[in-house]
Amino acid sequence: MKIALLGYGKMGKKIEELAKQAGHTIVYKKGSSLEEGSLNKADVAIEFSVPETAVANITRCFEEGIPVVSGTTGWLDHYKKINTICKNCNGSFIYASNFSVGVNLFFKLNEFAAKLLAPWDEYEVSMEEIHHIEKKDAPSGTAISLAEGIMEHSNKENWTLENPSEKEIEITAKRIKDVKGTHTIMYDSTIDCIRLTHEAHSRDGFAKGAILAASWLQDKKGIYTMQDVLGI
Ligand SMILES: NC(=O)C1=CN([C@@H]2O[C@H](COP(=O)(O)OP(=O)(O)OC[C@H]3O[C@@H](n4cnc5c(N)ncnc54)[C@H](OP(=O)(O)O)[C@@H]3O)[C@@H](O)[C@H]2O)C=CC1
Ligand SMILES: O=C(O)C1=N[C@H](C(=O)O)C[C@H](O)C1
Image (cartoon, rainbow, N blue to C red; front, side, top):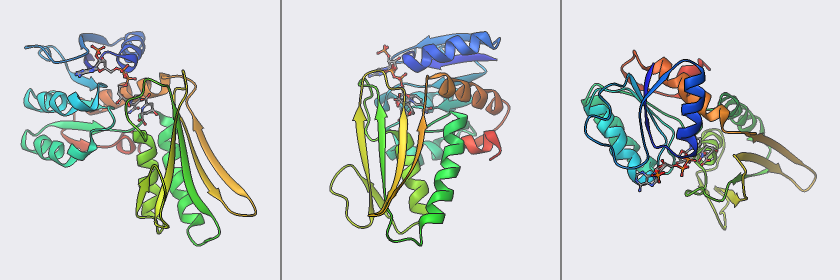
């Protein structure tokens, strides 16, 4: 598979390393704005950049008929617009707040726990996410996905970073040097506390998942999720 890497920071470099090991070729890699002809030779684009540039990068792929996998977080206010452009261009698209297999299984555990705990009013749900100090967005995209999973199965209607009302899930975002990504969901009562944690030991899981998604998407049209890729 010939891959264009749109965004060549920590994730772009990790994807390059693992993609080459798996026998794929990197035909383009760039941090900031895309040059003319950058997507010409690619079968698929993998986009891990910054919120300010993700929408333009993804749109460019649709316009040039290149399937695109995006892991950039913090741009989801534009998700509907991107879906519309994808449909209009007959494009191919997967966005995931987290591409690791472990986190996608964790999403399922989260929903199961939310359903199970929903009738037990004595438990108050909250969340903590910890990431490295370079991370630009807070809360993490993964924490937002987890909050959405809880909201589907409980009386919670929103999430917040501070002063939660009864209908809000409080998310605490911590930034600590070198932490790759740790997410904990807590159900606390006066008697006990139930905790579910996913801890990434490295960026390998995110990168492997993105390469898997790219390989899965390259001969498809439409908008998919990582759950579609994994069949879960
Ligand atoms: N979905 C998932 O599984 C995962 C998602 N992520 C997300 O992926 C994104 C990238 O993460 P990471 O690689 O760690 O971040 P980095 O900061 O290491 O890299 C970001 C890349 O974006 C480029 N960039 C920075 N500023 C701009 C700009 N103004 N315009 C265009 N390009 C720019 C950088 O280019 P340059 O080097 O030239 O500055 C760099 O190549 C984040 O949103 C993060 O949350 C991260 C891990 C997993
Ligand atoms: O910025 C990161 O590093 C990560 N970002 C993603 C997120 O915002 O959830 C995924 C992972 O947690 C690492």
